[in-house]
Amino acid sequence: MKLEGLKLPNRLLPSEAKKRGRISVTEPLRSTRPENDPTAAAKDSRNSESQKNKLRVLLIEDETPHVYLIRRAFKNSPQSFELVTSRCLEDAKKLIAQHLFDVLVTDLMLPDGRGVDLLKDADITCKVPIVVMTSYGGEDIAVDALKAGAMDYVVKSNDAFEALPHITKNAVTSWRARETRRKSAEAVMKRESHLRMVLDATSGGVWDRDLVLDQVYYGSNWASMLGYKPEEIVPHTRFWHSLVHPDDRADVMRAMNDHLSGKCDKYSAEFRIRTKTGEYKWVLSRGKVVERDSDGKPTRIVGTHTDISERKLAEQEIQKINAELEQRVQERTRELSVTNEQLCKEMAERKMLEKEVLSISEREREWTGQELHDSLGQQLTGIAIMSKVLANKLKEKGIAESENADAISEMIKHSIEKTRAIAKGLHPIDIGNSGLCEAMRNLAANTASLFRVECSFSGDVEIEICDTAAAMNLYRIAQEAITNAIRHGHADNIDVTLDCNGENGNLRIVNDGAPFSINTEKSKGMGLRLMKHRAEMIDGKLEICQRRGGGAIVTCAFKLPQEWRKNNATEVEFTRSEDCEQ
Image (cartoon, rainbow, N blue to C red; front, side):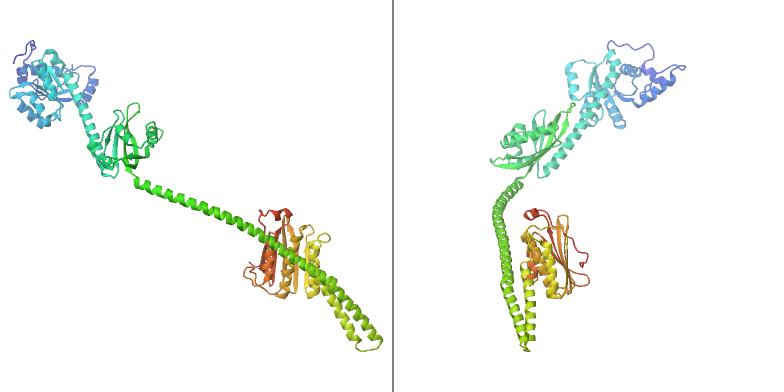
């Protein structure tokens, strides 16, 4: 094959150079430099770095002059190359099998075949780029070579040989970039395929939306969830949008736009979607942006649909049950409210009746006391006078029975005293004149006189009970406690105190008698229960405890101000006696 327009230098021919050993077909090409070059060290450093970036080139060319010119071009190139030559396809394939090359530069026509036949070998084309050279410049040949997989096509000439190192380097760079993209794309496709397989294996339906093309991939589960076959699904957003219930579309689009605009990290929405049969299912749709462009704008979002129809039905049933329960509660609340009002009314009426009963009881006591004082007292006084007159007449006549008459007169006198004491106990308090403290002193004095026991009273002069009913209840509590101490406890000493601490008042009756039941709830007697009832009538509290060393302590705590008894919002504070057993 002749190469027109090319002239070899007037130095050694390639064959002669090879014989003399000046050029080796497998020798790495190096640039020569003078021995006394002052930049030797710097160049050596650059040469060391260039060794790392050296490209191994396999040249398949049967024309010796062309090999020489190509070798010279590679030798003079600033890029570091290692050039290996072969004259035929058979030898080239052996070299390719034994060594790694960065690029193949082959002639189109070779003694044992065509250089483009290498492009048909997948084991070669997947490992190394190929640049094709030819002496024929037809466009059809170039197009066929590029279609077959060649990285570049060169028509032989002086300029082409000089540019071949640069062309070769660009071919390697382009091929490596293409391979990097191809491997990355394959890795992405493999990951996506694996992800879709995993997601399709789950119960949810997968969707993958391309925001740039506005196309959507729907998984097989997504289609079957709605009763469709995969081939019946239109891979477009409009198809999905048409299936969403009209009442839910605005909320769904709002949730999607909030995620795409960055307002929320994830997309999540619950809505109804139409099946192939026309019915609606509830689905939970969740997704997240997985790809963005260089400006950060979302380009792809992936998510799933989960059938939540059963959950929604359960929620609706629960809501229905809750509504029914709420209605029943409201009805029951109204009934209880009416009942409560009735109870409050009945309690108020009962309290009024109890007050009326106590008032009637007090009036009866007052009437009885008045009768004892006015009627029985007067009659006893008349009998006493008559018995005294009778005794005197019997003495004047010297009759011995005059002594019996004196004894009768004395007994009647004692009866008059007891009658007056009983009458005063039945109607003890004159609020206008003496007050509660004076009535308590009289109670203690009468108790000591009638029952022959030590009974004392000490009261706070600052205490003023202006409510006659309240004062009477406190008096009756003290009177009942004293009576119980004498009748059941057989006490010898009884102390009654009435004091105050701020707005709190305390009535305390202490005795040294025998212990008795302190449970007012379980007591069978009326006395203790009546005391508790009287304490409640004045919004007070009654406490009975055992006294250290024997006896009992009865305490009634109450509020002093009269207005408190009309509004019992404040809790009564107990001042527990230190003498009470724990």
